[in-house]
Picture 1 (cartoon, rainbow, N blue to C red):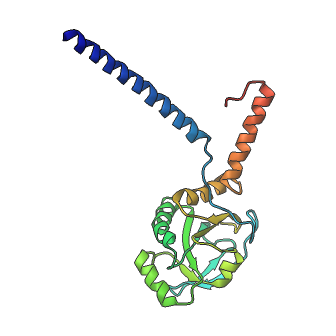
Picture 2: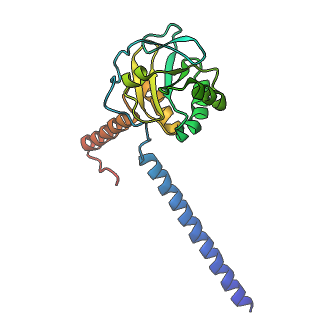
Picture 3: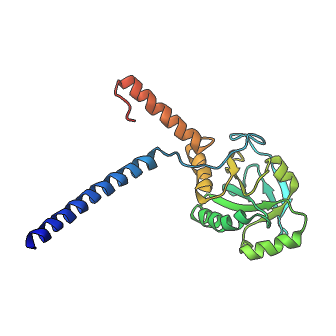
Length: 215
C-alpha cells in the first residue's frame, strides 16, 4: 500500500514537472509570436491629401458657436487630432472616451476636435451632451469631410502645428489612434511602413553577416 502511494506521488510530480515545462515553452512561443506580429495601425486611404502635404485652412463654425480653423498652421503651436464621428456610428461612441483619454495625456502638444457632416444640429448637440464632449470643438461640415475623403467612420486626421498632414485613417481602437501619433513621432506615413522597413533591414543584416536567419 505504501509502495503504491509512493509510486502514484512520483507519477503526479512527474506530470506536474512536465506540465510546467510545457507551460514555459508555450509562454516563450507566445512571446516570440507577439514580437513577430506587426502592430495594427490605422487603415489609411489612398485618396485625399497625402501624408507630408500642407493642408488647406478651412474655416468652420462649431456647434458651440465658435469660429475654428481646420487645417493649416495652428496659432498656438499645437497639433490637431480631428476625429470624425456620427450619432449613427456605434463604434464612434465607444472610441470617443478613448480619444479623450489619449489626447489628455498628450495635452501639451495635441488638441482634439470632433467633426461630422450631419444636417440636424439639434441631433448633434444632444450627441455632444450624451458623450460629454462639450469642452471640445465639434463642427458640422460636408466640405471638410470631402476634402479629407472621409468615407467610413470613425476616421481620424492628425495635422501638426505647421499644418502638415502627419497621418490619417480609419480608427476603431486605441491602438489605431496611438499609431497616428507614433507615425508623427517617427516621421513615417504608417506604423506598418516602419515595421516593413525594419524587417527589410533585419533581412539585409542577416544576408551581409552570413548568419542563418531563425525561422
